[in-house]
Image (cartoon, rainbow over all chains, first blue to last red; front, side):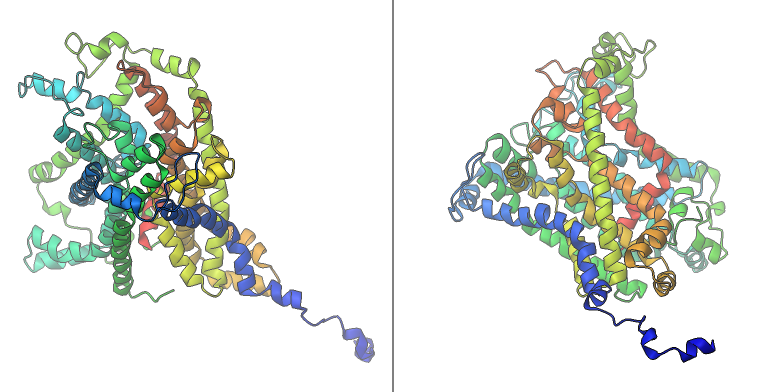
Length: 319
Length: 311
């Protein structure tokens, strides 16, 4: 020890000054930049840039294989006078509002049912989610077959029950076609709503219900004044997602009806695909899909405020 | 499932339902024993069984159609349509040995796995940086990533098609491998951020004092603890890829390169005589891999789904 103490001071230079490189290497912002690089690269090149490009294309007369020139709002003016476009807007709004409302009602009901105590509970819950797992297009094909005009199993059953005499032309009649695609969408969306709401239901303390029972509350009052208020935040989020994905739905319609009969089931997404890719009018198709953006913004606002309220209710700090 | 970090939403409870943790905390057993059996039959079992039957019937119908002989398929009067006594594997055999179906399955799998691995890699880094590095503006970046989750493919496919064409990726699996992460990264980043937040800060501080670099901390400490989250993100991303339709429909052209959903819709429908048997067999074979995967990882799947909305 004494030897070390007697060493000249110069030998202690092992502890070197932190170089600029060392400081940079531990700098949060510098490290953060490199950690964010892959994700940001993807999102900027394949999401943000196309989003802007899409809006630009909607102001040009681009076609497939020919970059367009700027033509101002001509595409939008043309769409303004296009009855098929307005029909698709109407269809989209109808599809979204009816499907989302029923999805919410049935999903909440199913969640409440699944929250009860019963045998084979775990298996039931796992089975309920299957429609959500299976690729939409493939289940849409099953529905296409179920709703076939000649060999539909529904027509067959109803005929044998004596309720109808002729086959129902499910996907050939405008009203029936709309009902069928909305039904298929509800069928696919209910499991998602039910399972996420079920997750929310499980955080509700059972003692609240016991207290309410002692106070003489009815089943409905318990739902209205305990379950529903506690679920509101999660409902806001789930329904925002549900509305968003129903509004921009494409594959279900494309697999079942391709927008037919007589455009009765054309949504904005399917119409923009038809105009842009099949007919080659990129500019017009981009204008149709850009017209969806205001609706999406509205949905995002709802989601945002739903999230804020949730945080406030849980007393979380803002990190 | 002790390895699941404590989520605000208890995944295990969602699935097993056997006395959720909150219920154990407040020592109550619920009040279902107060109801009589006939009452429960009408208010619970009857509606529940109707809903479950409606939810599962299309799959039964799909499976039944796939194994029915052709003459029974279209003759509803002579044979009971709800059952068949002489199942055949003709449709499935035809599908697997006389069409491009194995090709399509392979394409779907290849694209899904590559895109998922890429996105999980990018999301792990991004989520770690946002939650733990907390660089300047991390809060805002987190918000932006959530917003990008809400941008649907149906408004991006037209400009993306031109981008893909410019980069010379048209009609190649790379087009899908590079574009799918735009759907997957926002979701899995958001999910992993939730998981990383549950890992105690102290562990990282210890490692920092011991001289570990950030990269070492991520690989040796954070990731092993976040494995359930990684599995959830992986499975959910894989399912999303398998399910994706509009990009695959727009960016791929040649029959051999297609993915299962697109190929079935476009290649199996010829004229007016729909080949229902092979169509349904194709739909069944395309769904089975996902259902099997789901059966093994139900809990992770649910945690991914509820995790995405819980934040």
